[in-house]
Length: 233
Image (cartoon, rainbow, N blue to C red; front, side, top):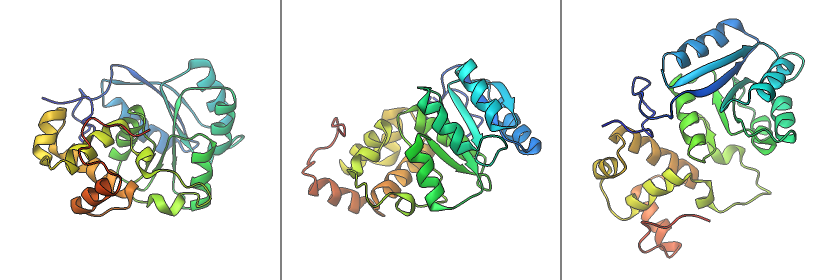
C-alpha cells in the first residue's frame, strides 16, 4: 500500500494530505507553467496562485497563506531572497522552496539563514520538487542532493549532526543502525523500498557518512546502543 511519505514516484498520490495549497512565483512563463503543470498532475496538490515578480509573490502569499510557495531566486521588484526575508519578518508560516540555477554557496547559505525551507536546482530532475515538499512537511530542511550540505553549512555555526535529520529520517536511521533490513523498514513504515533508499542517502549526506557500518559506528560513538524509539533534541 502506498504511504503518504512515499514521494519519489509522482504517480503515487497517497503520500500527501489532500489539497496541499501551493503558490508559484517565477518571472519566466515557460518555467512557471512547466512547474505548475507538474504540480497539477497530482490531485493532492492545489496550485492556488501564480505570479511573475517578487512583490506580487509577497502580497499573494500574505493574502492567501498557502501551505507552500515555490519562489524563483531572480525576480523583478523583489528577489526570492528578499521575499523570504520579508515573509519571515511578517511571521508567515508558509513553507518556502527556492528554485534557481545558482550553485553559489554563499547565496544558498543566506537563503537558509533567512528562513527558506528548501533549495532546488532548476536543472535537476522535477521529482526533487516533491522530495522537497515531503521532507519540509515532515519537519526537515531540504537541499537538492546535487549539492553537498557541508559545502553550504556555515562553519561558524556548528550544529549537532542528528538535529539536521527530520523525524522520519531519524526513524529510518534508528532502524538501519539496529540492523533492520531496508525492505523490512519499508514494510514497517509503510513506504516503498525506493523511498527508504532515498531517506538513507539523505541521512548519509547530512551526517557525512558513506556506509551502514559508518552509521553504526556513529551511533556507538553517541552511546546509542539501541536507537529505535529515540528522537534527536
